[in-house]
Length: 258
Image 1 (cartoon, rainbow, N blue to C red):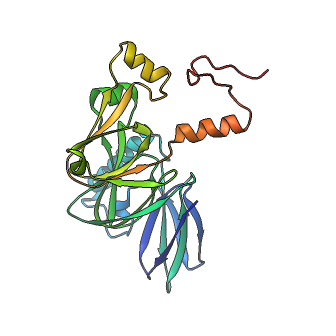
Image 2: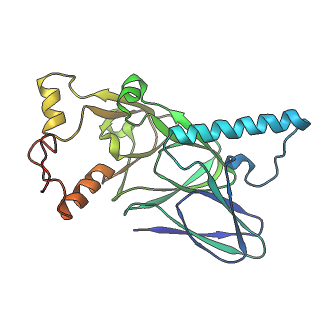
Image 3: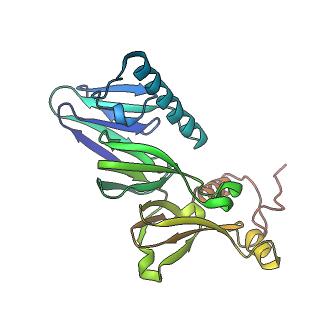
């Protein structure tokens, strides 16, 4: 399992999702906030007296609500070096790779809701809703995290990373929804049914273990996939611990040890 060790210059700030922090040097302060990273460096203050404070409070409440909808922690942790160069360590929650994405302000990045680890305070965090009607009904990739601005974003995934560009494969690829880690702005993301609710579609879902949906990625841009899905890792651990006994139906008629 990989980790990221970040060096901070005096006054520099990075933020992470709660639970991704590992260690820090004593000259780095840590603060937990509900507010978004756009206020991480403390330079933006409420404007317009009570009205400005109210608008800021409403903005914070909307961010918290979006994160709750995404199933993420409600707060961020901020780390700032106060004197000299400081060091902070971060890691993901699953065995796998990490990647530093460099944003130059021209293209946003979208990431699966569990992929985000940490970012510079100059990178803004948001929630994006994609996948269309199928994604909303199936819960497949409907909620994504969006990163804009300039700076470094660190993401993590399970297993190994695979870098693809749909343009190299005729402009479109179809992927297991659990394998999508992140993709650049300009890639069109959707979710489609696999064969519909017919005989072959049910065979794919029951015996193929792929469910009823696949993610579609179209366009020209970077796509990062992971070689291991959370579901397959959970199934492997359950089997290793003597958990569910699954037959060829992939758990549809599973039995439990007595």
